Image (cartoon, rainbow, N blue to C red; front, side, top):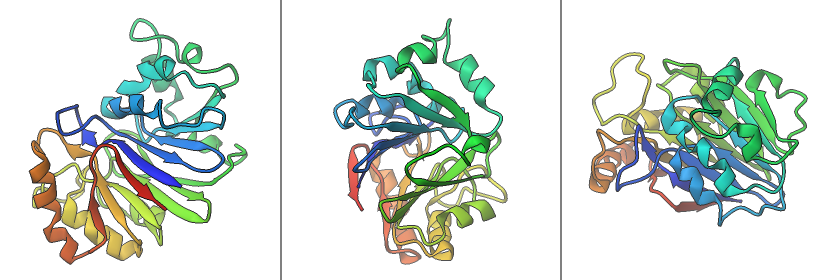
Length: 249
């Protein structure tokens, strides 16, 4: 499978990146993680003859602002969209007039909107585990079993027990890194590089890629690279994510 980081900025787009979106292309389906403006980049990358699953971590705009481009993408197969438990109404209110077209008119007939409490009998072709993680609004992390590999998605969150549980033994963890080193105190809603590295060690993951760099804090690409370098002394397999980066598993 190929994991492609299509948007690695948190908060807003800058010359360093677009807002949050990650694409996983497996042999039989595609999975999109979050729908910031990076989602527009899926169009030339997806095999539209295969099913697509769109998993949203939460409803903050840097993770949902790209939803109004769904009709530009022109999916050919019904799309299954997943939101955190209790957030279906928030999704319906956001993706409708007068803000954008109704979501059902932007995806093929038969597309579904599910929340994380409705996944037990969803019939997904991959293993999916989801738990609430630490953020001011309802937010869920995802643990996906795909083609014998485990991919965990943690955005947005502070360091918490559920994040460690979801990441345990994963082949790849896509971890939010919204804060600069040394700025996270107590039960913060975001992580920074050394916290991410400690989480990776505690969870026993194979590799971790950092994303969701706060646009107001990480104002240059050099800032991303410099911030992550010391954390590699804790966890060497720490990757600094950039837009359009591909990771093959």
